[in-house]
Amino acid sequence: MRLSVLVTIGILGLASLLAAAKPLEFYFIDTEGGQSTLIVAPSGQSLLVDAGWPGNEGRDMGRIIAAAKKAGVKKIDFLLTTHYHLDHVGGVPALADKFPVVSFVDHGPNNETGKQADHLYSEYQRVVAKGQHLVVKPGDTLPIKGIEVKFVSANGALITQALPGCGAPNNLCATAVKKEADASENARSVGFVLSYGGKFRFVDLGDLTWNKELELVCPNNLLGQVDLYLTTHHGMDMSGSEQIVHALHPRVAIMNNGARKGGSVPAWKAVRSSPGLEDLWQLHFAMAGGSENNTPDVFIANTEEACQGQWLRVTVEPSGAFTVYNSRNKHEKTYAAR
Image (cartoon, one colour):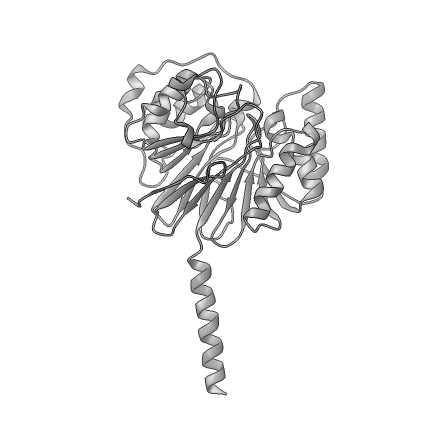
């Protein structure tokens, strides 16, 4: 009897250790210039950030579900809508009608009005009513085991205190030039910093625009440095100034651009020139940039305009080391923990 109990305890202990050793995974899904990022915590809990475009014969919905199945995800625990624009929230209703979603996360009501905006929000509310609903503000966190998801922007508000260990003066702010104020949903994007194991940090600011980004890093960098940076606003030059990109000091950047959306030359250059950047990976070859303003093909998930929607996966080990994998060409590269 005692031996049986000890064996049982040993098996449970081993199972617990194996679960703890599971990596953190990101799937950067191609939604043709929209956004959809699937994050799977070591606990198995899932966070989907945005769901791409509606229509297109269910293209984005199909790509998200395929990525979820690849990741072994059977339900979306949290579906975060960064803001209410067609390329981010448009795909939510179709996805939620086909794939289980437990909790919907957003910044509260849509601030834009008009025929399309009203329809988008009405359809979103229809599916939100079927699940749990969380409205977040800067400083809030999501209850996901094993990782910390800290919100730094939401509905136009920003954190006012630096994240732990952050807050250093940003010398680049002296040359910062603001742009015209943005009253759109872009400037109300929900943004967050994800931390794992105290050794890995990732930032996603949705489509947060220029002036709001500057407020997060000027005069002091409230966000600190990150290992992995998802380019804001698909790599459009309405966002992504040198002041924020260089302050974040990413080791690796992922650009969720489309063939003809995002990947603008000024934003691309701001990322490429960031001190300490090891590599930039892109979901698409940016047609307007030419070969001189795109990363090498080996780091691009989709090199042709009419593509099959290949994805990029990032696997993060408990040590902080992480590997980026390109589903198009099976190329991968590992970045050692620092």
